[in-house]
Image (cartoon, rainbow, N blue to C red; front, top):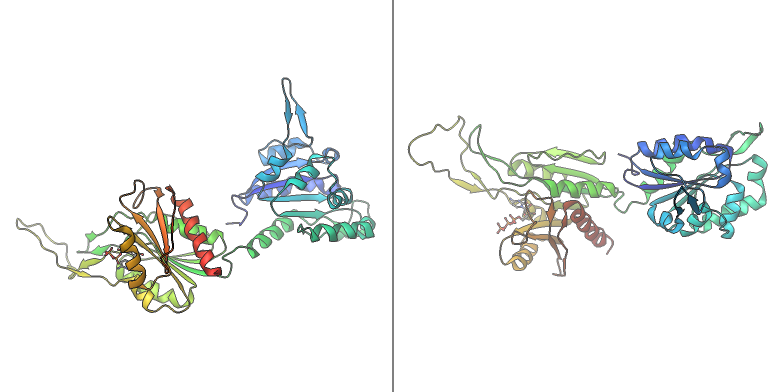
Length: 403
Ligand code: CTP
C-alpha cells in the first residue's frame, strides 16, 4: 500500500507545456489511493482543460477566486483548500509562479492557496534551459527551499523549444515516487519494529472442540495498521480471526493456542523495539486433550483445566530494550487492577478498558480506554472507534519512545 493512500493531495497546475502531463499525474495519485483536488492558474487552461483534470480527479477544478453559475456567484475559498490538503504539489511550476511564490505575490488562486497552505508543499519546476539557469530562477529555487518547501528537481532532456538541457519537469511516475519516499522517510515509526498480539486463542478439548472467547482481533489489527501507516515494521501474531491485514509492512503470523502464541512471541521478541499485547489469551486450557472426539454420555463431563503461560509476564521478565505494552480488560476495581498488572508484569504502559463502559471491550467497533504508564500517570480517552483508539495508543507509544 502506498503511503499516499488516504492522503489529500492538492495539485496546482501552472502555465507550462508540461501541464499536459498532469492528467497522468492525477491518475497516478488516484491509483495510489489519494484523494485529489486540482487548482489551476488561468493561463494553464490553455495547456490542459479543467474538464480533463476534473474528470480524472473526480472533483471540481477551480482557477479563479469566484465562479458564476446561472443562479449564484460561488467563492472558491483558497484558505479552505489550503487547510484541506495533506500535501500541496505545484506541477509544473513555471519561472513566473516560482518568482511570485518567492515574493508572496498573491494575484491568482494558486498563489493565494500556496500562501494559506499549512501542509508540506512540493514543487516541480519546468521551463526552458536558459530560464532554468537564470540567476533569478536559481534565487527563487533556493529561497523557496529555505522557506521549507520541497523541490522535485527538473531533469535534463529534450525541451519543448527543441533545445536539449535542464528544465524538463520530472516525469509523473518520478514525482509520485519522490513524494512517497519523502513521506516515508519522515514517518515517526520508520526503522522501528513492533510486535503485536491480537485476537483470541483456542485451547483444544478434542480434535473438534475448543475453549475460546469472543475477541474479534479488531483492536490489535487496527493498532497494527496504524503502526504500519506510520512506518513501523509490524509482526502481527494473531489467534483465529477473520480480520485482514493487507499492509506491506505487516507480517502476519497465525497461531491457535496460548502456547503457539507464547512460542511465536519469544521467537520475535529480541528483535523488536516495542511489544503490544492486545490478544485475549486463554488463562486456562484442558489439561488433557482427547485424541478422539469425546462421545456424548448421560453423565456430567468434567474437564480439568491447567493454567496457560502468561505471555506478557514472560516478556516483562525478559525485557531488555523493549517498550512493553499490556492490555487489561476489567469489570471492577479497574485502576487498582491495572496498576498492579504494570508492576507484576514489568510494563511500560497498560491500556485499560472496563466492561462497565458501554461500547468498550470485545466484538464492538468502539472502545473506551485509559492509558497508564509505569509512574501511574493516567490518561483517559473518550469512547471512540477502534481505529481512532489505535491512533491514541500509538501516539502514546511514540511519545514514550522519544521521552
Ligand atoms: N496475557 C498474556 N498471556 C496470558 C494471559 C494474558 O499475554 N496467558 C496478556 C493479555 O494479552 C493482556 C494482559 O495479559 O495484554 C492482561 O490480560 P488479563 O487476562 O486481563 O490479565 P491477567 O494477568 O490474566 O489477570 P486477571 O485474570 O487477574 O485479570
